[in-house]
Amino acid sequence: MGLYIHDIPGRLRVKTPIIKGNNSAAESVQKILEAIEGVDSTAVNTLTGSVVVNYNAKAVDSARLLQTLNQKGYIDLSRVSTNEQALQVAASRAGGVIGKAILGLVLEKAFEGSALSLLTVLI
Image (cartoon, rainbow, N blue to C red):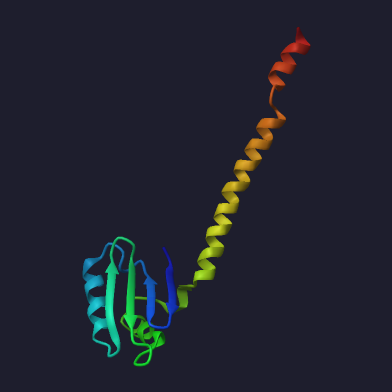
């Protein structure tokens, strides 16, 4: 899992592998974020590695929240994946799977009955 960020004013979601399965890191991130003026609430999910921050967009912006997490070593902003990039990767993977399935069906149909046809010719 790479770093994923989804941001709309007042709500920030960050997925990071550092938090996944790490209760200690999750608690630290939660304390760090809740200490920032303007942060209303945080929810951390160690199963998914996700942090959701609800904040007052007039008091603080997502750039400050992200910079704080970056400075503390919980995220690496140079490895950010946006929603569009995540969708593109998912679509590419799905396309590969669908392509293989279609190729399998085409080959199956093309060679359907070929063994029987060969047997008929020999008899």
